[in-house]
Amino acid sequence: AQKITQTQPGMFVQEKEAVTLDCTYDTSDPSYGLFWYKQPSSGEMIFLIYQGSYDQQNATEGRYSLNFQKARKSANLVISASQLGDSAMYFCAMSSVPYDRGSTLGRLYFGRGTQLTVWP
Amino acid sequence: GAGVSQTPSNKVTEKGKYVELRCDPISGHTALYWYRQSLGQGPEFLIYFQGTGAADDSGLPNDRFFAVRPEGSVSTLKIQRTERGDSAVYLCASSPDSGSGNTIYFGEGSWLTVV
Image (cartoon, rainbow over all chains, first blue to last red; front, side, top):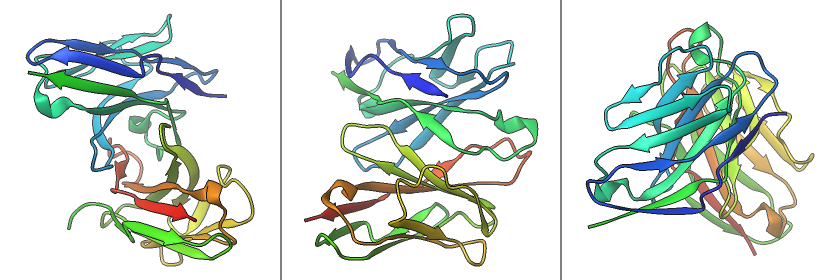
């Protein structure tokens, strides 16, 4: 069975600093996808970044990068130059199917989330 | 709008009543998902449709929960004989068909409170 673990219930970072949100996962699937979503107080889940298990390089999207360590089964999110608007709940998630392998994504398995607070 | 639309945004109902939650996915998206998010938890998968058919309904907690997508677009999640434990945010999401390289896009959710 797939499982996502986020061990940090809350994190605090000063504006303009970098922060790392931890995520470990467990799966027996030979290939899989890893995602990070941001959920502000409005409730909408906003897609941030994706990493396929077979990707050789770590994914980056603007200020977001994913530190993927396959042997450790970790997929930590790094946010550089934090902004006040980054304050939100962040969820790590996993799919059994890497979505760019030509098949529909299927279900996602989510962690419990990390509440990030950015202070001035 | 261009995003996933869910109605109602808030629903308060009495224990034992029947509830319907509606989801209008992004136009052209063939896959549609329902998740449930309880307070302090991550979203939990309920069911996913590929077109009109349920491709995976293994997350539905019991037979009080049912979902339909008769024309492959709008979906309705139906909850019979609601219980207080059903109180949660019900999130709908959609994604394009295979090969597009896009992820799942979520709506803002329907907050259900059973009193």
